[in-house]
Amino acid sequence: MRTGDQPAGPAATAPYRFAEQHTPPPAVRASEVAQTTFEHVYEVDPRLMQEHVLQQVFPNWDTLRIMRSRHDHLAWMHRHFAHTVVTGSELLAEVEAETAGPGNPQAPTPGPGPISGPVAP
Image 1 (cartoon, rainbow, N blue to C red):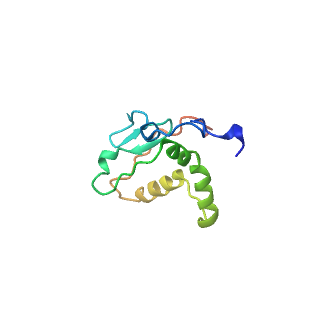
Image 2 (image 1 turned 60 degrees about the vertical axis):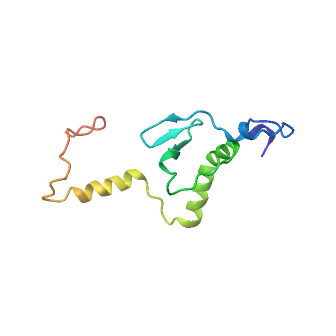
């Protein structure tokens, strides 16, 4: 990692203060079950996970390190374990096709058509 690519933070010679390193910014509720602390870092509300999952305390820089490397990790997993990568839109189309069978009361009704795109003659 080049010097210019290194994340901002305390210098290597800065004194270590536990509270400073382990206390994230105040959480902002993103939904009923999710919150965000750092920008683009969404997590399950820890109060919902106390019963079954032991909560660990780890430094803020580790949270940011994990979030910065998530795309590299996903690409590595795809290269090593995925024969095909399926998009969410492909999955939704498959589910909609299965539920649109004849006589299915839950089948979606046809809408007015696409908002944009070519118009049929």
